[in-house]
Image (cartoon, rainbow, N blue to C red; front, side):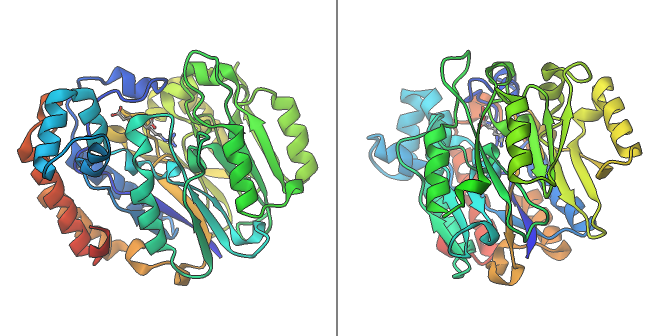
Length: 422
Ligand code: SUG
C-alpha cells in the first residue's frame, strides 16, 4: 500500500472569473488574462517533481467545457454551440460557471478512506457534491464517471455524492495514521454558517461519508473550522492545515477549539504529532496569502517527510524564515521543496488543492491514470500543441475557444486511450 497523489491536469479553459466568494485569490483576479498552457505546464512540472522525489503519481482529466450538459439541464436548448451561445449572451456569469476549469482542484473531487480504516477492507471514495458554488456543483457527474473507471477494481468502492448537505471532499478531511497502510484516525472538518463567507462543508455530510465508508466511530473526529479562518479566506480547511501519516501541520487558528482538537487527537492516536504554527509567528493573513498550509506533506522513500510548498511562500519573508527554521530543525519535516503553480494559485488553488491522495496498491489502479516520466513528456508536448496560450475575460463567449477546448480534451483522451470518458 502506498499513497498515490492524483493531480488534476489543468484544463484548456482555465480562466479568472471570480466565481468563488470567500476565496481571496479568485476574487482579486477578476478580469485578469489567464494562461491555460502555462498553467497546465506548471501542473505537469509539479507532477514531475513528485516523480523525481521517488513518489508514485497519478492524474485526473479535465472535464468537458463548455459544460453544455449542465446548461441543457438549466433549460437551454439546441446543439452544443447553440446552447453555449445562448447562455453566453443571456447570462455571462452563468456561462463563466460553465467554462470553469475548476476540476483541476482534485482535493475537492472526493473524500477517500483507505482500506485500513473501513469495515469491509476496501478503499472507499465518496464524490463531493460541491454544492456551495454553482460552477463547482456540476463537477460531480463527470468526477464520478472518471473515478469509476480509475478505481474499477474490487479493492475500491466508489460512491456517488452525498445528497442535500454541502461536501467539499478531501479538502476538508485529514487522516492521521502511524503509516499510510495502517489503521488511522479520520478527521472531518466542517464550517458553521453565519460568518462573512459561506461555510462550504457541513458536518452532516462528513457524518454521512463516515457512515458510508464504514469508519470506526472511535477513530473518527468531527472538528469545527474557526470562523476567523473562514472570514480570513480559508474557504477550505486545507488552506490552514495538512496531515501526513502521524503529523498534523496546522495554523493555531485553524479550528474553533484548537485545545479540544489536540486533546481528542491525542486520545484517538497517542503517537500523533501536532505541529501548530502560532499566530504570533505567522498571522492568518500571511498563512492564507502565502498558502503555507496548502502544501503537500509527503513521506519520501527514505521515510523522512518533505513539505512541497508554493513559490509564494518564498516571497513572504516571515513564512520563508519559518520554513528555513523548519528544514534546519530536527522535527519530522526535513526538507522543503518549492514548486511553481502560480496560475492555479491565482484562483486560490495551491499544491495541495491540485491533488487527491489515495492509499492503494498501484496494481489495482487503472494504469491510464498513472504517470511516469515518459507519459509526462508526451503530455507536455500535447499541452504545448493544443492548450490556448491566453484567455481574456471577453474570450469566454468565443466559439473558436469552445472548439479549441473540445479539441484539446479529445486529443488528451486519445493520448491516454480514455475515449470512454468523451
Ligand atoms: O473552489 N477556486 C477553487 C479553489 C479550490 C481550492 N481547493 C482546495 N482548497 N482544496 C474554489 O474556490 C475559482 C474559479 C474562478 O473564480 O473562476 C475557484 O473555483
